[in-house]
Image (cartoon, rainbow, N blue to C red; front, side, top):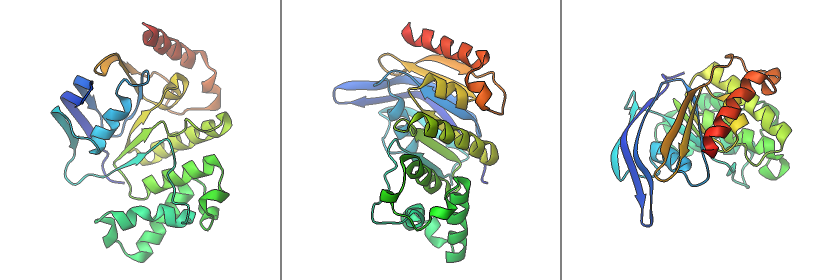
Length: 249
């Protein structure tokens, strides 16, 4: 696994024609950390991820990834965005076709990395299935495997589990946290769920109000191992209440 990426943001602004989405944001993300971003709709959470990914350009300010260059990251969206005419294996192989660096990898190495990614999300038996044959949870696992196949130093996730039923969502949360423990890439995870944020993250950032103001930067004081018993514990719920109160203020 490559070294995880750290992120340094100084006086960041992002403006659109009718709205200033981010105004003067300052933030440091430690390499290898699991950070969740919460806040009301329209507060700039997704825009921040897109800026970090280079899908949008800042209006003003600095945004630096380190170490750089080279650096690698993957983006997982709310929708799996699988290609309907491609099998699970072929969907996970897509980064090898799109990335200049990955195109240089041998066919044997490519196959090994694809199968390893599928094993990480427990889908190695589904390689020949097409998206229409998969459940919602399986589709999201394929999306996650596709993100992991390039061994990213940074994983950006924009409400990836929002459309899943509760049981599947819990399974995916556990799987993601286990993958983070094993891989220790940096993860930035946007969610509207305060429970999900608290259960998964080491650190929670709350954006609120006009211009994506940082309303809370909270270190999650919970055990490193996240268990099912923890979901209903008083220690977790105490943090959720704190987040809820700050969100209502």
